[in-house]
Length: 251
Ligand code: 13P
Image (cartoon, rainbow, N blue to C red; front, side):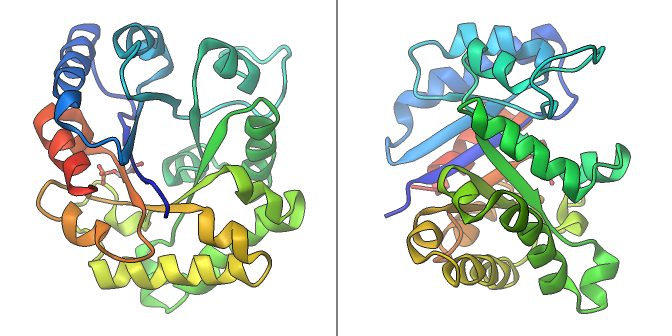
C-alpha cells in the first residue's frame, strides 16, 4: 500500500506575516488529519527557517522548491542539496515546468539535480508533464516517457527507489483547468507501467502524485484513481482551509 502524499508548493508567494499565518493555520489543523496521509510544505528558501520552526514536532515535512546540482562552489545565489539536507529538508521539487520554461532547465540538468538530491539524502519530487500543444498533437505519452527516460538512462531505475514523480500537465498549472481523473489516471498508469517494465517492485512502490489546479472540490475524485497517490498543490496550498480539505481528501 502506498501512503498518500500531499505537497504544497508555495512558489514565490507570501510575505513573512502571510507565511507565518498560513503555517500556523495549517499546523493547527493537523490534529484533524489522518496519519495515513503524508504532508509536505515547500515554501520559498527564505521561509524555510520559519517553516522549520513552526513545523517542529508536527507531522508535516519540509520541502524545498529547487536546488543546485553542484555540491558546493562559487555559485552566487544558489543552494546545494547538502545545505538543504543539513537544514532538515526532506523533499525537493526538481524539474518543475516553471523552471524548465522560465529558467530553461534541460532534462540533463534535471537528471544532475535528481542525483545531487539523492546523494545528499533528500527525496526528489520529479515533475514531468506535457504542454497543451503537445497534448493536442497527441504527444503526451512520448513527452512524459522521454522525461522519465532521461533519468532512467542516466541514473538508472534505482533513482526511483527513493523519489516521487509528480505528473503536472503544463496546461493545468495555474489555469483552473484540471486534468480529469480519467486523463490523469491514464498518464499515471503509463508512467507506472513504463517503470514496471524495468523493475516491478520500484514501480509498485513509487508514489506518483498529480499537480495542476488541484482544488478542494476536485481532489477526492483525483485521489480515488488507482495510480494517483496524492497531489502537488500550488495556488490552493496558499489557503489553509482549502489545503487542509485537500489533505483530508487523500485519506
Ligand atoms: P496550481 O495548483 O496552482 O495549478 O499549481 C500546480 C503546481 O505547479 C504545483 O507544483
